[in-house]
Image 1 (cartoon, rainbow, N blue to C red):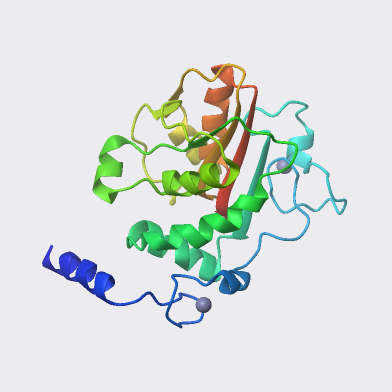
Image 2 (image 1 turned 120 degrees about the vertical axis):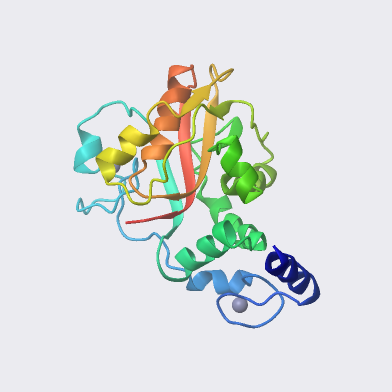
Length: 231
Ligand SMILES: [Zn+2]
Ligand SMILES: [Zn+2]
């Protein structure tokens, strides 16, 4: 307790140091964002998985099996969850260096595709107990920035956590899907094009389950954004 109070005091007194270059003045300088590993290369236009199909704008083999997406219509991330991108997200989320959300989210602003035309921005909700323990919801922090940049309403009332789930990190793809099933409830989304926000995505299980629930509640389209994807 005392240690964490001390940390807060130190952070208030000392100027910020850039996580990339170590110079003072920002949690990450705008120009230092270029050092983070981009989610580049050829990727599936729907699920954003690195694709062996060499053609740009193509679906991966898995997505090509379904005419209609069951979850997200499309997903984009700025970075790969590796190197300094991974470190920044961990520092922001688990060590409370929340000023990092600003530069990380600003990188996401341009990932909104022209064809998406979203009506609302919706963060992946945390269960109330977890949100209290952490003091914030990381997805909400990112969503605030996206909503502001695109002049869209941030809606925290459309998607709720129905139950707490085990942390996804140690689970394999199938377990993740089972673990997250039934974790969300959606309301009042009929006819809306939703921009759904998470911090990190691995198999896409969380975003796709939330998208499935939003779709079942009448959402017209659901597009996903996350800062980083674990390839
Ligand atoms: Zn820097
Ligand atoms: Zn795909």
